[in-house]
Image (cartoon, rainbow, N blue to C red; front, side, top):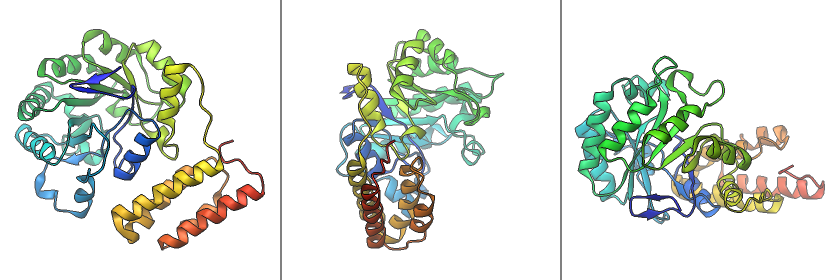
Length: 329
């Protein structure tokens, strides 16, 4: 069983931190459906910005399953250390450092994957955060800044020397963004170079792909990102397959409806009706991405109150039931 510091994970399948996606309702849902760990959306290390409504939502962890892993992003060692301490005071049990985000608005501030260009700064940040808290500190990186600067192995060695207790690697460089296919050879090289747990990330969208990536890299586990959007049960399916070798069936229509309605209810509870309704739209779009539901989605996206959204979902699934339409097919 994979362990991060004192925490034994339920399994070796982790939900990746995704801005605007892995909020508390989605993390709780994925954990309940089988993810071994769910990492929060990244939180800026600048505590002067924490009074914003968005930051307050992201800082909320009440009722979440243990261990609670909170990701922070920034480029100043002292500020990152202060942010780590504040998050631990707020209930974080694992601090995760973002050095993997390729977004321009993050990299422009020399944060996220942009940090991989400056190995000395990487070491300074990691040392500052590890020394600031008593909980495990983990790190998420890419294979490098660019194809010409694929320095993931060097960064991994720095991380291990600084006391990082687990490392997740996305199989692309920052310059790749999400284009092309993820490559796993660098992840295998990193696994052979360090002794801390390694989680492979990037383009893992089926249980079979997860197994193949683990076999090719020797990684200790996988981290699932975009494949979980609209399929919060995928982490559980992957964990089941890795443990048993048996494929778990997709949920049926009634199960999908129950999951969606729970998700929407928790969005309304956290964000209030106005924002909850708007955030619900993108999740419903993901849930029904493969379902040929274009007409329904265009109507759903125009709904501006919670009860009408719930009624609309119930009516849609009743229609699918009447027409013997299987959404998971």
